Image (tube, rainbow, N blue to C red; front, side):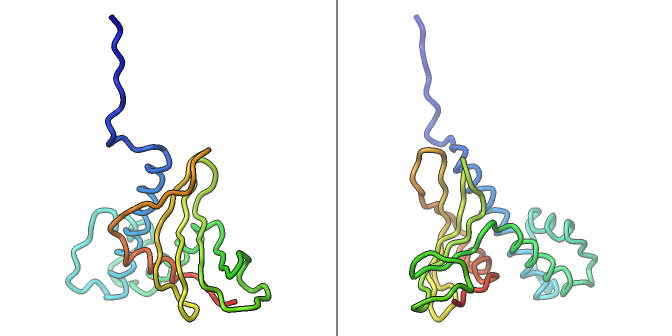
Length: 159
């Protein structure tokens, strides 16, 4: 008799693994950046945030430099940052103020992006989405709302 088993529903797809890793990386960068901005005042850090600080050469005194390096690294992580009243690149002529944005972080299978809404040229609400080959974009639910808005705020959203 042959038996087959199916994977438990808690197993993550490759798109979900990618989404989880990117969401956690952005959250760790946000935490490390916040530590630098507050100059380390009474802040406990996760091991992931400590790793970000180490990666960016934090020496206990260079808060400003490291916070800027973290911002730059996160901006460079994005493949594209787009706005729409109809999708287009920032800086191209517009007929009206943009109301939505997307930051494409990875493409292919799996793909990952940050989607959001703009109010007066600033992100006011955003969420992550993931996709794998042959599947629609799917919202990735996480607890990193502050980190998502911080990440979205690193980009220039004016028309």
